[in-house]
Image 1 (cartoon, rainbow, N blue to C red):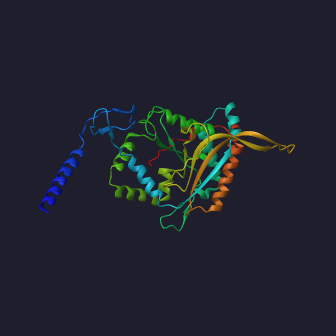
Image 2: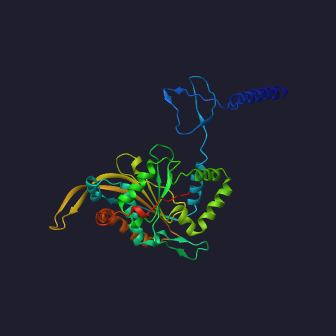
Image 3: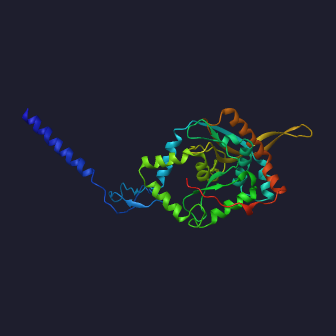
Length: 339
C-alpha cells in the first residue's frame, strides 16, 4: 500500500512540473512573427502590446490590444438586445436611378438617404420616440438621418447626421458626404478634438457607468434627436463586392433604421404601359434590411412606410425633384454626432 502511494505521489509531482513548464507567463513588449506552413497570422490596424514567445519555426501567435472604442460597440449591442425589433427584407428595383446615374453623376448613398427622408416625412410616426414614462410619443417634423462615414485618408468610420434631409436634394446631400469624407478627421465636424477626447474618456469608464450615461441620454427624445438623429442608415453593400445580399445589424437607439446591402441584376417581367405587352428584362435590384422598434411602430404602419419607400426608389422621384428645384445647400450646416 505504501509503495502504491509513493508511485502515485511521484506521478503527481511529475505531472505538476510539466503543467507549470507549459504555462509560463507571457513575456511583455516582445513582438515576433513567424509562419507555420507558409501561412502567416496577421492582424491590421491594431497595436501590439504583448506577445507569447513560441518555438522558432513552430507555433507562433501575436497578442493584440483591443481599442478602447470597442466598448461603445459592445454597449450598443447590449442595449439593442433589450429592444423589441421588427425586421423586414425587401428588394427594390433601382434600374431607373441607375440609368439616370449614367447621365448625371450622383452618390447612390445620397439617393437612398433622400428617398428615405421623403418616405419618413410622409410617415413621420416611424421616427417617433417614447417619453421617459412611456405614455406619449414625440414625433419630430424634420428628418435627421444618421449614417457612418469612412474618411478618405483612412482610419475608423465616424457618425455623421444629415439634418433636415427631407428638404434637401440628392446633389446637396452627396456634396456634404463628399466634403466630410475628404476632410482631415481632426478638422471634420464629427472629429473635433474635444469631442474625440470626451468619447475616449467615456469609453474608458466602467461598464455600469457607461450604460447609466447612455440610458440618461436616451430618456429625453429631444436629446436623442440632437445627438443621434431620428433615423439611421448604414450602407454596407459597397464592401461586399458584386452580387446581392442582405446586411443584418442591430438598432440600439433609433426607432427605425435601414441597412443597404448588395446590388445585383435579376430578370423581371416588365409590362408595357401603352400596349400592355409583357417582356423579360434584366433589372438592377438593391437589397434593403429595415428595422422598426415594435414598442413605437406597429406592423401595418411599418408596411405602409416600406411600400412608400419602395415606390420612391423605383420611380427615382427624388432625382426628378432635383431637376425642378434649385440647390439649397447655402442654409444647411454640418451636424455633429456623439454616438
